[in-house]
Picture 1 (cartoon, rainbow, N blue to C red):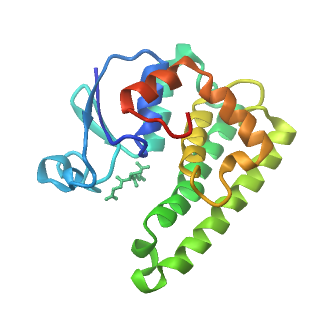
Picture 2 (cartoon, rainbow, N blue to C red):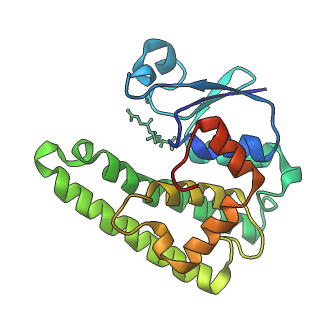
Picture 3 (cartoon, rainbow, N blue to C red):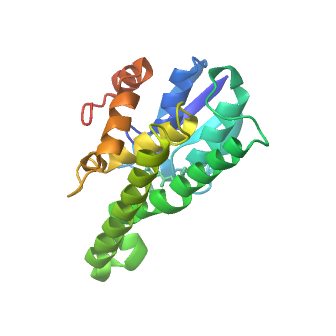
Length: 210
Ligand SMILES: N[C@@H](CCC(=O)N[C@@H](CS)C(=O)NCC(=O)O)C(=O)O
């Protein structure tokens, strides 16, 4: 049994989406980030970083969106969202998820919280740099998909594509959203066509990037 602490559209989205995709029984606990519910003592006891997501797995708290993606795909292998451990495909899968989590997602953190990265006085410079970094990632992923796509691992979808789609969604109001890149746009269309995406949108009350 899973319990997901989430906020609509936040880094919890990919975890929620995968829970729906694999049909796992779960409860949702919505946190109001604007009201600071993620900084309250009871939540910090579960996630000392004070961010979403946190997933309770049989009552045990786990955090970090990418770790939760890897864990869910492993615990529910029949959905084929992760390659065989030890295979070269598995290595590529780790490579992509860690790239998304270590390079692209932190650039988004700077885009959304520029003062945290550089202080109020330099927030605009931080945002400009974040934009460059995000667009450089889109360039590289686009080139990869053109050569080895249509998914990150080739012919079949993996949990990494769900993570990528969440990050692409975050770019929707940027000067150049990820969907300006044709291979990425096609991947987004395929991911959005999954029935689990519709359910996710209904449950989180999302409308943008539908
Ligand atoms: N590395 C963490 C980052 C999570 C994160 O930054 N979550 C954001 C929402 S997208 C958050 O909780 N922001 C509220 C805050 O930092 O106060 C993860 O991937 O789980």
